Length: 337
Image (tube, rainbow, N blue to C red; front, side, top):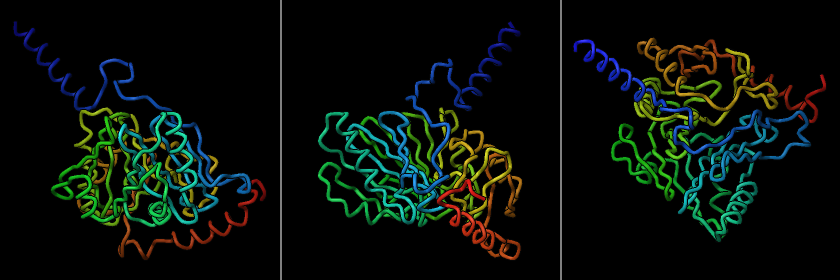
């Protein structure tokens, strides 16, 4: 009898571990809606004359990923367009010199055509307030298209709290229902004061903005950033996380190696997706800092605190100018020396 109780106890512990790790009972997709990421993305070349300003990828019929070309701006951000039954949501509006409206309108009108719809309201929201994520705001707000009436969410803490119903920033989470598609929203300040993460229950994707992606994670408020990452770890515990998708790729496929800031053409860049393990890895490193920020390169991303303590040894601005000059001089043909 004692062995039976012991076995039951072990099973109970194992069950709780499985639940806390967000594991599926069978390798059958886990009940999340399936989709496909491309093996490679357009970056900014090799010949900018041949590159469209935006690449549009259909992850599944109701989720599209738009990437801005590096030929327009070295930031090359990713935008996310999600459709529910009642409304759509666009996360971010792009960086400088990359008007997203033509590609967005085309994608949305094609979705309407395929779904035999005449219109759908479009929520324009943001992962955070930095210029490479809000540069297209004016163009989006100027749209006069009855097929896609715009609901614009200003990128401020108060407006974000109000729209998502977040009672207590940053501790309380919020949500938005797109119509049989609930999106959970977490406040994750640290990279920016208005940073948020979105969890799409339908696909199991966690959208993390610039707070986690394959590249340099710039940390402007270290205590807030550490608390935000812990909040994401706790929120995702027991949930299926199919992908963590940020807004940039700056890492190469070679572990611990990124592209210099300002790079336009990245022919050997890292895949976009990270796993929940990246959150846990980041948390373990943040915990070891014991309140003293440090710059450290991990396999798939780097933690890059900013501020006066790093100014004396920071050569990123001079490296940026050097990289940009070389890349812009070769933008019409990066295969040339």
